[in-house]
Length: 203
Image (cartoon, rainbow, N blue to C red; front, side):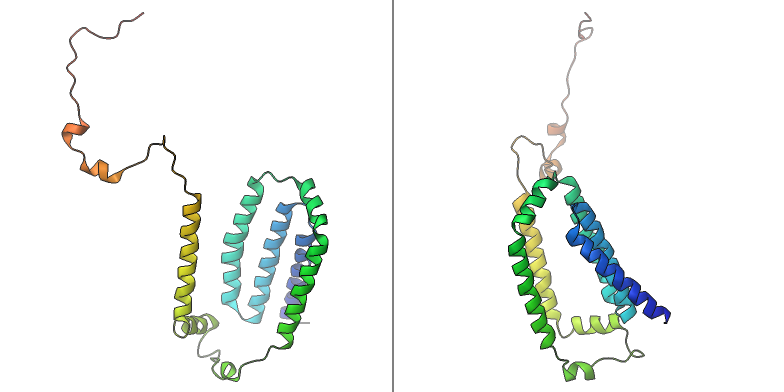
């Protein structure tokens, strides 16, 4: 057995085991941590397959941003785990039905999957371009409009989230840059003529 094969079996076992622990974990924090382990192991499998860009994307985006955000949200929320387990058991038949439908869809996709001949012919050789360079060349030439459209969709979602969560309170002091720049010396400084020996009396 070669070293690459040994690492493949290792990463595969860790991915399957951590995925099972995500589903069967009783604590949501532990489930999120096991999901991070599953993502890191999947990144190792991508590296073994030669897709280094997908591996780094999985680590940076999902592990470094999404999963850490989920972990902080779960830890900050006051979740009643007993009530959560009761509700999970209540919706278990519906969840099983949805899982069967998803498995059937995956089986149909895998069964009808074929390789496009032009995709095989246009694949660059390893000595010509790397995977990251080839992906960037296709993404920013052939699919540049779809890439920009995806960016606009994410920008719209970000603006919508800010608008929905931004609430103006009437009695909160806020900085007004235009008012600060427009003020003069007369409005900013006031001279007071205090008479001599008229301070605050000491009790």
